[in-house]
Image (cartoon, rainbow, N blue to C red; front, side):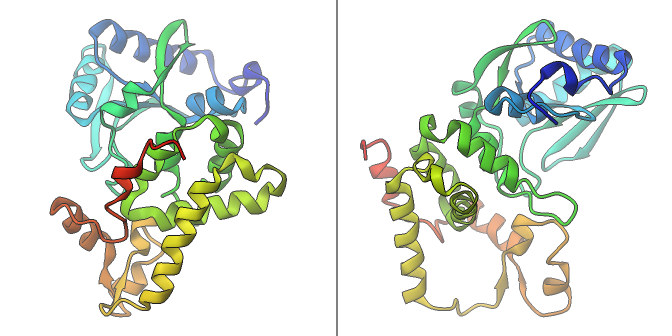
Length: 274
């Protein structure tokens, strides 16, 4: 990891870099829309470059199957790894991830990923890079024992916070506002001299909601939403301790258009120039 782009790929074989470049070229020529995410997008927003084992491309789900077909015609082996969020394509030992949602099904790749993406050159091709807001939206839900993306979120807030569209980010988190609050509080702890990267109105709004939950007290239903932010760490709660499956509950709420945990008036105030 470092600030020198050349160092980021020195440990990668030329064939691996060529495979990534070929994938981007083939998909671009075929007109399959995607934004580049992962280490390349992180570097574009923060200036931090790091070695990466794969190439992360973010298409809409409706385009992910077409992406696999294009690479299959070029001899790649493909798999539909998880219909909630991930397909893969392999060129020998090298691979590309096609990510169309966060693993919990919340941060779905939609039109706004493309509308707010910025252009940059990657492997000689002009590509769209995922917006900082959507990267944060996705990364905030990665809280595993073996991987925690909190430092990535902090660096994105540090480098992009003062220019981000916070109304859109707040809308993205909607019913998951407490997850966003946990990350901005960690940011304030890490960077007490950079607190204004997060607008005051965001902190006031999130803290106001927190006070509302204090007044509200405990929910009557015994439910654990931990498996929305971690795939495995809350298995015991649901399997052995009698908590209702929070992810299943959340999916049902989303499909029904439920707003539990969010204030519906937020949509009316977004963009009001706080």
